[in-house]
Length: 311
Image 1 (tube, helix red, strand yellow):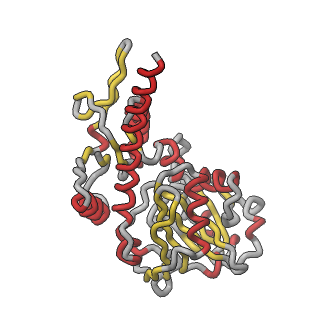
Image 2 (tube, helix red, strand yellow):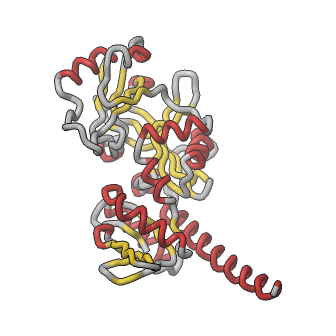
Image 3 (cartoon, helix red, strand yellow):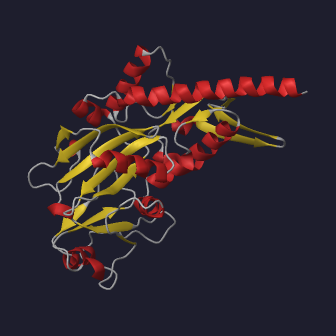
């Protein structure tokens, strides 16, 4: 079962369907807003359209806005034997850039110097004062949305005072931001896709002229890279640090040649990197799902036999 909206980033869904047809797997779509969790004395059940259900395998994708219902439902099903790829808490943590950097730091995975804040100040931005370029990112931004580049930390502060930050009233949902040096002047990065502890696709992205964001959706040009590139092993380490089964990793190579992680995304699209590299990312994800499901079934049968023998 795929928990998502097929119309959102349709090309990724199409690739999953093609991969499923090639290996005889049936995919079903469930829409996140139609989930419920029923809580009663002595019983809790995950439901879809009011009916108790327990899927065998769940892939979740366009669910970021539904954490309050999706995370509990997935955890409940997992406790009942459902194979859930990308544990929900880990997936949601990966969408927050600051939490991602903390996880990477603990695992000693190289990261870019980052300052996180709700409101910037001259004192807070002092470590970036000597950098000729600074980039500002909303902590939960995706596909390059909300990213802005500045010539210096001072320019960032001036723009912030002019209203570039989203100064909403204080609330639990208020966004925080990260500021980083603009490595190499921006406009070029690396994108990897990792599945089950292996980098299955890797490319370099060159932004369109005059653009610092190297997203394919913004016109960047991709170039396939060999999987023995140092970025591949760094991407694998990043996914392990974030405790994800599969996902995308954005990286950058600094002036000293060190590959550093920019972002990790449990729900990264894979249509672009599949087209650029020719790699079957969707097939790798489904193979992981089926391997995990088969392993659980065999483990259950073996456990039952051993239990019977012991008695």
